[in-house]
View 1 (cartoon, rainbow, N blue to C red):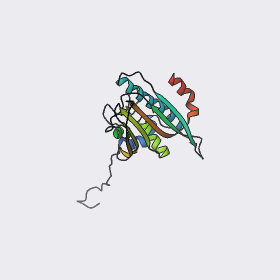
View 2 (cartoon, rainbow, N blue to C red):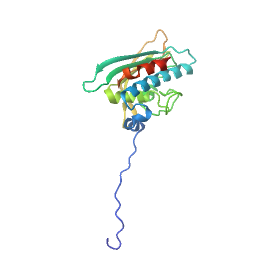
View 3 (cartoon, rainbow, N blue to C red):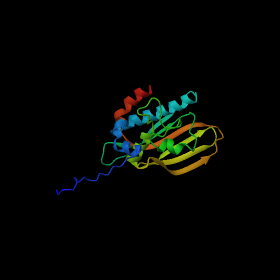
View 4 (cartoon, one colour):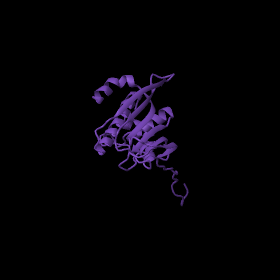
Length: 201
């Protein structure tokens, strides 16, 4: 090196990643490391989110849970399941639904998270896991007692925001309030069936 020349410094590119992208790359942190564990975690997180919604509204919980097998994978032991959880909680105002269900760490009382869960992520990771394993959107139906709002959403992982694929508004003559969420995910129900039954007790 000749006199007067400084050391050569390689240029490094630093880039930040969104919370959604981080948990996409490290989903085992939130309990989605394999299909059986993901099945248990998704059910637990969505149910506990519903319990919190009912508790917030001081409403005795009436929660519906259904796990339906959709189709077998051809080359793996796991299956695709449709998971639906519906509650009679306070509901989510429509302006909050895209962020509450399509953005990790969205900070509002309508956030899809619960006090009982890990990292405050709630069901958002279930939505993200379902999307990355099946490439299917999440369906969200919610009402605060007025009209009913139906959304189909995906998560923009790179930008940590929701993509709204569909938004339909319907009348609500029964004044129903609550939230229903339906997603498809790569799972293994048979290996966690008894554990889930014990949890539900």
